[in-house]
Amino acid sequence: MLLLNLAFSPLGDPAHAGFIYHIYHMPTPAPTIPAEVDLFLENTIKEAHGDKISPGLKTAMKKDLFNRMQNHIMTSLLQALPNDSAEPFDALMQTGPDQVAVHNFFIAHIPNLPEVTARAMMEFRTVYIGGVKS
Image (cartoon, rainbow, N blue to C red):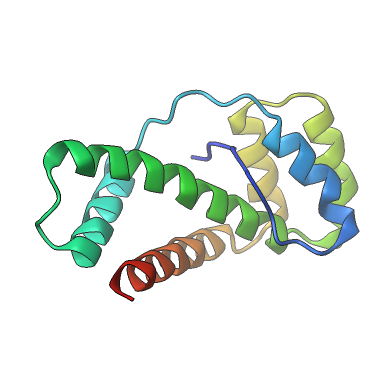
């Protein structure tokens, strides 16, 4: 499950520049937050803010955090791609692929995809909670 809406990337490798442009300009549907991710975000918000967030605000925060987390995950996935995947990925992005095709590319080219994704989610959580509590 990936919704691609990358707003920025700290990647310094010029070989990745094409990825970023094509991902950023890839049309994305309105986000639907899967139940397990919704729970992850719910717990992240609760740890950062306690129970003092109204339900309406919490819903809006989850949507925003979901988009921001997706961006962070996408950045991590791009960084995890081997350099020899740059041209094939750029060629794929030139075709205007759907999310399934992009996800399948990552599955085929990032052997530790679940670990990269989990690490990115935990990094996001740590940074968010640290930013709120500081």
